[in-house]
Length: 507
Image 1 (cartoon, helix red, strand yellow):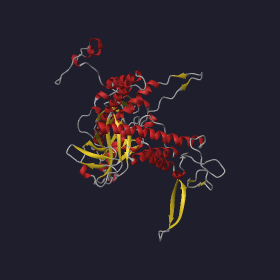
Image 2 (cartoon, rainbow, N blue to C red; image 1 turned 120 degrees about the vertical axis):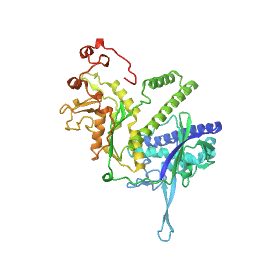
Image 3 (cartoon, rainbow, N blue to C red; image 1 turned 45 degrees about the horizontal axis):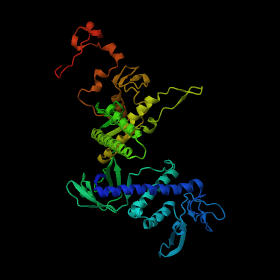
Image 4 (cartoon, rainbow, N blue to C red; image 1 turned 30 degrees about the horizontal axis):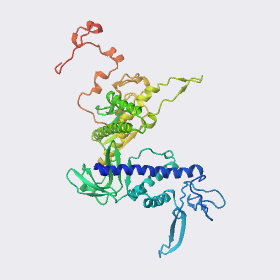
């Protein structure tokens, strides 16, 4: 089984300076290759730096979209990528046609190479003429072009937008088999990075389980620290997913803001609001203001940016660790996990403007929607769902996605759906007067749609106590009072004469 392991690198000052220099050169290399391809994409090779080379008999295959040569004869070029180097030999590649039985070469075909293939050849020649390119491993330079080619492929498939020029590059990648592990100790190990040398990293996993050579390895800079991500082969095998017919219990989960996760057994997982709590939000705003006050390009601005990046990285690590804990609690609860199929990108869109018909706009509560979007993104529901899916896959437990429509408004007893049923965390059906905690009710309804029973906690649950009963319903069946007056209900109803105490453990 292939898994990706992350470790923290511990480079010395010389190695860290080399890594920083590599990232600067790779960023310039990527932007230069992007500019070269953008010129051909926008102008179809008109007014480009290098002259267009015309070749007789060149054409483009309409079915396979393969371009043979650099242009159509007697017409304009048909290059979509626009990569035309000065050396014409770098623009073509040869392929052979062999006989299936005798393996003899029947024909040699000269084709126009792809954009990434041409730029990789040009990069190889740059390593012989420029010192900053010669210091970088050739596989890293080729992978840098391959990443750009992947971005263009996704753009042509309409998955993402057109690739952008970047101001900062924080990662590079080695090809499979280039990185080697050396000197494995109890608390740390050493990895040989071609072009950099032996670099120590913290050993947080058992490296003896790795089988064969390492696959792709990515070196990343985050928050002033360096990390390495290895794709390795281990002996573990994922178990088969247990069919629903053989499962005995299900746990439904409902994600929210006040309660991060509400489980169908009545328990809750707290939303710590890692980056949107009052203290952290104020501190992050101060970091942002400190950057905006600094002069662009100055050393003080660079220091302020690093300070902000370090703080953001700490918050991201804290959120990631907490999400793993919550995912493990959910997966260990029952045999099946049922969750809502939420469209989170649509939920965090900005408020649409409302025209008043007179050339102006009506109030659309954009500020409130922006604050809600920040809290939703801070809760990281999608990340929790991904972690639950991975832990359930390792445990052989199925994860069922349930449509999220009306799960918070539908009554579990009579099935009545109405917006008036819910008021915050309180649920009171206007048809049958069923009272419940809104989040717990929704999680139980989600688990019920799978067709299995959910686990029920035997203890007294906060979800089933009177504290979740709406005040409008309390006035009918519950007579409120103050504990300080005992049975004196008349005096207790007068709020001006209430006595407030701080009760201890024995109260």
